Structure formats: C-alpha cells, structure tokens
Image 1 (cartoon, rainbow, N blue to C red):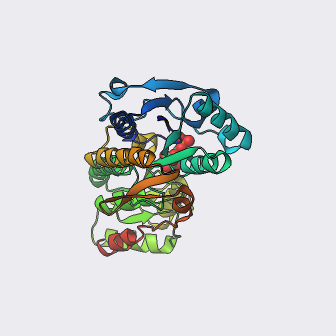
Image 2: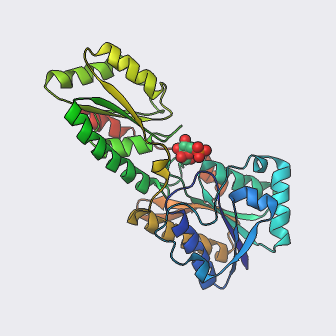
Image 3: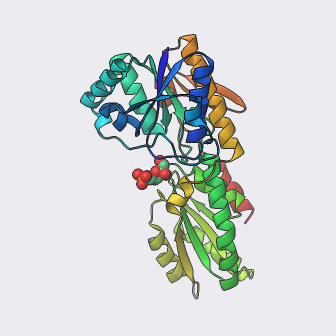
Length: 320
Ligand code: F6P
C-alpha cells in the first residue's frame, strides 16, 4: 500500500503535526508514504518525495507546513484533476490524504468522484469553517494568538482611553472572532453570519463611557459587512470625543507553534485516517465531535450545515 499526502489552501498551525501523524501512522501499518509538495499544484506538476520516519522528525511543534501549500486554480478544472490523477497513478499511489479547509476537501471530493482515486480529508484551517467537525486543526492556536494580541492592545487602549477595533481573519466564518472575543472580554463581536445594527453598537459603547469605562475593544471578523476603517470613522463621528483605532492582525494569526489541543487533534485524526485507509474505506473526511474522532464520506461531510457559535455573541452582550 502506497499513500500520498499533501497540504493545500491557507496554512494552519498543526499541519506539520498532522503530516507527522499520517507519515508515522502509515509506516507503522506497513505503508509507503509519499509527500506531495505545494498542494494540488505539486500534484499536477508531479512533485513527489518519498518520506520516512526521519522526514517528519522535529516538526510537531512547528507552525507552517513542511510540504508547503498553494491555492490551486488549476485543480478546480477537469483537466487539472485528470493531470493530478495521472501523476498519482504514475507514482503508484493507492490513496491520497489532503490536509486543508473547505476548498481542499472539495478538491479531494472532485478527485474521488471524477477518477475513483481513494481520497481522505483532514481538517487543517484556522477558520473552523468545516461543518462536519467541531474543531479544525489550527483554530485553537489562532484563537490563542488573537487572545494574546487582545491583551496587549487592551493595555494601551486603557492607558489612552481609546476604542479599538481588532480585525481578525474569517471571510465567511466568524468563529475566531467569537471565541477570541468572548475569551478576551470584548465589548462587541462582529461576524459575517449576522448583521449588527450600528445604533446598537454606539448605544452599547456610549453606555460604557457613561459608566466611566475608559476603553473598549471591538472584535470584528474580516467578512463582516463594513470595513474596519469605515466602522472606525462612523463610530468616531457618532460618539463625541471618542478616539477610535484599528488594528488588523492579519497573517500573525496563521503562524506560530501549535497549542496542545491542535497537536492532539492533528495526531488523533491523522492516525485514524491511516486506519481508515487500511480498513479499505474509499473516501472520508475525518474530524472530531465532542471527544470522539469521527469520519464521514466526503460528499456527506461537505453537505453538512455549519453550526455557528453565535451564542457567544449573546453571552458577550450579557457580560458587557
Ligand atoms: O483560509 C484561511 C484564511 O486565513 C482566511 O481566514 C483568510 O481570509 C484567508 O485565508 C487569507 O488567505 P490568503 O493566504 O490567500 O491571503
């Protein structure tokens, strides 16, 4: 049995721990493992490297991905998928493991459906936007990175009596904002899943100021309706004497050493994935529900509807 492994889409802390789990798990069960560089781009270009136990030494604690990654437009076409499949066949690969987010798993599903290649998806993305799993690999690390930034920004916002809008990643999913915002004691959390009345935000901030509150923190996901600058300008205009600053955290959220939670999730799902391959399953997305590692056929996993954590926004409003 020979398996291939790749990482695709935006990188996430814990991807390396997951590669390690698949490679060492595969070797443990007597498989040969090939790494494919730069995600589906490398699959199309035939960038295959044989991996042994030493290839994944000393990476469990490292952010990024040793296999590198790319967002492949070519793999969204039938021709790209056909080329990728031909390279898998040429290298004698029996099953492919793809670590990544929604786009990566959808690419894997297309590959399985169009060619019959056995494909397995592991949830590697900071966004936590995959409905079939409670958590994705990298999300916990990212939330903790944001939390640490909120702490620093809170110090200086308080000294200067400012309102600060902290923009976090999440184009369609507000989970990073919701988790870091609640844990960081934000006044307001703004996410793409729900519109928010500007009057309500102003009222809330003004009530805090009237109580003598010197600063406020707004956590805003990048996909929320307004840009952070537009929001800052509107708030400054509507709250007399308020100084409103914007901090866009950006790629800092995607790097860094993975937390214990992310390393454990990566290791558990990675080993389960190899076991599914050994058991003869044709395709699956592996994730976690509660404390149980789960798997579903790719088409089932990707048709599920995401259970949003919007409840956190309500709690944040109560704790204001
Ligand atoms: O998919 C993860 C993610 O970090 C999103 O939250 C963000 O919008 C996007 O990637 C940024 O991607 P890129 O690396 O293409 O700029």
